[in-house]
Length: 522
Image (cartoon, rainbow, N blue to C red; front, side, top):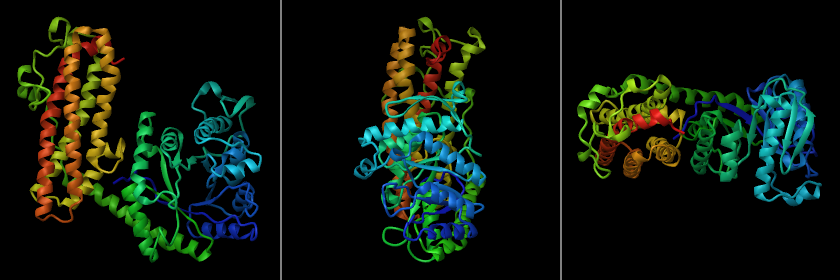
């Protein structure tokens, strides 16, 4: 379950029907008066039955006062990025900062080629989109590279812009929302985009978790937060879509927000009454449901769950055992050992031997480990509260789904899956970068690094076991015998993980203190 905490917004997706050119504009006016946040229009310039998207959006902007306006999504092969950037900026300036950009690679290649556009392979289409995003942001003057201020320079395979002056600057920073479905495009979305804009007809709700996971991973790898990517969703009524009354719609959409993180819902409709119901009935009920659930989850976290204290250094030291008692197959809580390698010749290193700058690396390692310890302690405390009757299994689900690591780093289908990815990511970074660096800089540390890598494998297996046990717990309805058995399975898996992980973290901090102080991470 995933909730990125974004504000709930509603949009519409009217047809740009050339046979009734004023209808889409009138629907935008109805949306503006009904509390709708966004009006978006599909963009198929080769379709003889469609109005031109940008001209239509401009008419809509002139007739409305508050709705945002966006193509859904702009056909990049037939919209050169420099011209597209200036179209967006112009609409944004004329509308008072209400223009956004839904962007796609193009898909109907025969029609695109018939209209004079390029025919691209899937890989070429993604490459072109990445280059186009760079062009767009440089033209708007929002490129992260200060050296490019005032000029546009992109020397790509598909777009080459050199010597062009940037501008006009839009009234605000238009967001770029990518219509993405395949893994590579999802990774581009996580790395570069402001939002993700799939359609329910092409990507059903049950496929959202896997796609979100890819976006989240790419965002984190790029130094961003998963919540930096807005999640929009084109929805429809009827078969495979929303069903029932406005109250039913509100419940269905609230589930998509709280379970899958989708927060802006764009309804495909040409019915003005449906637009009114969506804005005036579904919207308020949806926002109330989401706010109630978020408030309840926050209250459970703050009032019913007390974080177990992370052991102090003295407490951890008092629990340590000798290296001979610690192996990769059976690591006792608090492991490590005073004789662990931490300096040249096996001598234990101390803080007094190093400058403050040198101490930054080992201290940062401890900070990362402390975060892992704190989240593990919280998970243990939640299970204990359920066992003691202070929390139900259902309440435990809500608490687990609002834990800070899950909200701020990896927002995947289960807390332990996210925790597993955090630990695995930390270990992967060590295995692929930090450890090879230390081996080169100080060969004597090799045996310690070998042991740590062996322990990584053991811990990853234990994380998988915890994840399976948690999935078993959250799949149980109620708290009968089946729920108690699932809770015991989870508790046992967590305790085995805790025994091994806490010992591993303690040993690593002590054993690598000296090498990290001398050589740093890279």
